[in-house]
Length: 111
Length: 114
Image (cartoon, rainbow over all chains, first blue to last red; front, top):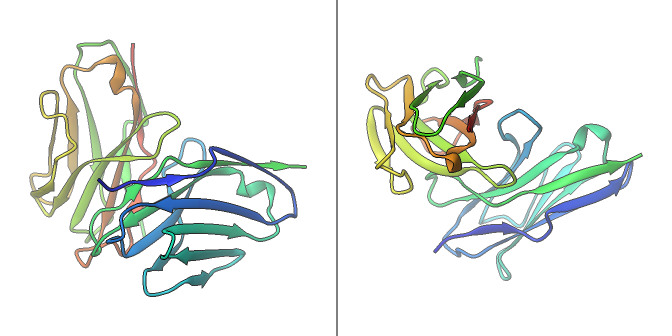
């Protein structure tokens, strides 16, 4: 069946450093991938997305990389700030249908 | 633009009791989703509506969970009777009829079953 998972449950990063959060997916039919940020007591918040016809997409301080050969997705956050502390989820969709989530990585920012 | 509204924010009930959650999606969004998020896990899709019709309810435990979206706008999710393992955050999301564009989540209802 389909699954979207993350490699690490927790990631600690020094403030100001870059963060890299990884995700592996198993369904080669997935054609749309999204990264969400979830803060305590809130719903998932869209960060950035990428379609399967691309391998890189950049936003403000965030970059998503997609490697379809090994079914790997990563989120890079530049110059990590205290406000980046949250749980990050990768998610997938096929043919613009419902979005399926993985388990999440908690990002801790060290002072 | 107003976001997805959910109520209540918190609910504590005893096992075997009933509970209902309400969701008001973003205006004009035809597709509405209910997710269950157990602590430490990612949201799991329970049911998907397109207007007032069910598109996918394959993950909904139909012996105790039910959902409706009678007029194609607001939706309610009900659990009857509740079990301890139903303790979770119940998230509602909506998107446009063109697919996942504008897929937006509400803040959720945190349910504790004791």
